[in-house]
Image 1 (cartoon, one colour):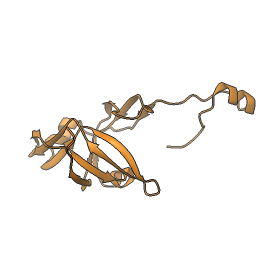
Image 2 (image 1 turned 135 degrees about the horizontal axis):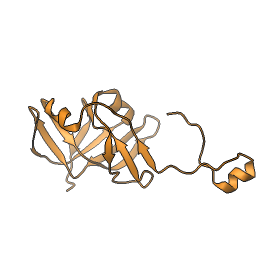
Image 3 (image 1 turned 90 degrees about the vertical axis):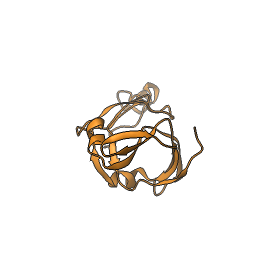
Image 4 (image 1 turned 120 degrees about the vertical axis):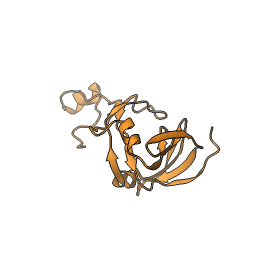
Length: 141
């Protein structure tokens, strides 16, 4: 992305002579025009399918390292089929490092953000990431 303008309420836009106000954005759109999630699953030998990341917190802002938990849906995929649910995990990884290990990006679809109120509407693709750092099993239910 490219920063073109900062959020500017009408009052400050008028006071600074900046012209029009710039509203806050409350959506997040990540493009993706690859395969569907079903197609990605069908082409998978063995992997975890994570449907939700939760309780995401910054560990190191300089390296963009974050930690969090999986929640409400972690499934084992074997030979192109979802075999069943598995336990939740704690994970630690930078989104930059995770995306640098992406081997496939699927087709964007509606996504429900689970935590922060910044993005009330979201659209994102499924992403296949090799060596995602699941650091430990979580007791989260």
